[in-house]
Amino acid sequence: MEPKKQEAVIEGILFAAGGSVEKARLAEVLGISKEQAVDLIHRMMERYRQEDRGIQIIEVEESVQMCTKKELYEYLIQIVKQPKPHVLTDVLLETLSIVAYKQPITRVEIEKIRGVSCAHAINKLVEYNLVCELGRLDAPGRPLLFGTTEEFLRNFGVHSIEELPALNQDQLEEFRQQAEEETDLKLDV
Image (cartoon, rainbow, N blue to C red):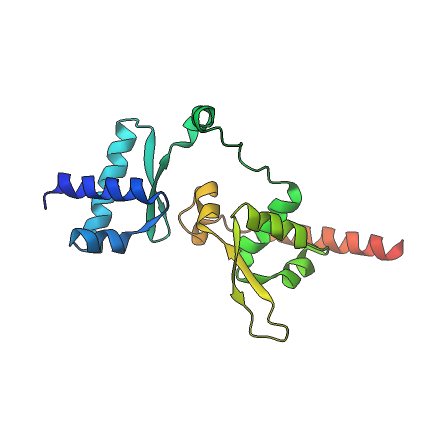
């Protein structure tokens, strides 16, 4: 199959799928190696960028997805009348950060780090499809384990959790001291 036809097949599959498709599956369908498929996809991504198209192909871990460019969202919602993206409060962002950096993690572990109940925050993050249940911990009570989703990666513009910014050790120490001070204040009351 010639490269133009292969690109058309990839474009058609990604458009019809709506969600992400594994690179290995695309290679399998095209009858080529995964490396050849990735090279083809990267060429398509570059051409879409150069032509300033309204769509783009993004990579999410070992998958790719076709989507509308972020800068066109305001026009898109005028047509499809979808609500604006959910607003992430400080509590939700804090909880999401803990999940992103510590996954897989249980609700109790998150609450231990935050120092307060986080059931509502976790439920909201699951509702927004930023966090999902990964399974259960092999421990008494078999608590649920939580981790981030592909939607999280898409929304934060990273291909995998390994691309998240490294945590600054000085800031971590400062946060730890602040948390200890807050805890001491609560105990003195």
